Length: 331
Image (cartoon, rainbow, N blue to C red):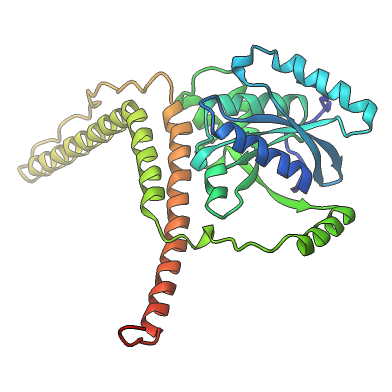
């Protein structure tokens, strides 16, 4: 990875949004859709551009080689940027991109990779592209960066324990900072698109009008079930902790009732003594509670958004069907 560290930075970037050229966006989409048909890892690549005041301009990108090719990623990235410099192409790395099917992108690998990028380049970010959602008619392109608390959490590359989470006050809801993505085309590209629109006939985009909701919901619910299985140990710890708290509460209530009865009989209350409850040891690693929990929250949010859009389309179709004129038989 090319290092362009900014001394004195506190990982609190002033970047407010990301501006990506249409050509770079199309290269990302092409690479992600090509690798989506292969059983290899998720498509990944480097984003090249410039830092302009409060925005990051992404003007070019190139993909990482697949892991099965046996190529050193760092050496490959440096060689590519060295070759782009003589042809007057922006060669400064501003982040990286990754494909994620159905919003499945939160993982320990992504956190550690983004932490390394932000350690070297303070303003760097990651673009998450969802080819499945895009194929359904909605472009899914989001930019994220780690918050200061998440940077401190991932820096040690160890286990996530209760002390770290409590001291840093970090959870899955405040690990990422989402940046606004703005797509921009140059005037020459806009002129070319205008000419091409006259040459090629306009095609209707009917993917967004698909009324089939079962496959999407089944896929998301199956993913949530898989995440629930991964959190079984964490759920067991939570269940035991809640059970112990209930036992403590019941013990305290019984003791208060007994002291009230002794006071009514004129007897002294029972001496105060510590509850002899053995503390339950938490899991060694709380990664499922943070990472997997965040992934489940994303699945739930996507189901909520999808169902709201699907219901709106179903009500619209039902209204059109009810208001349609009745045709005589045979016509």
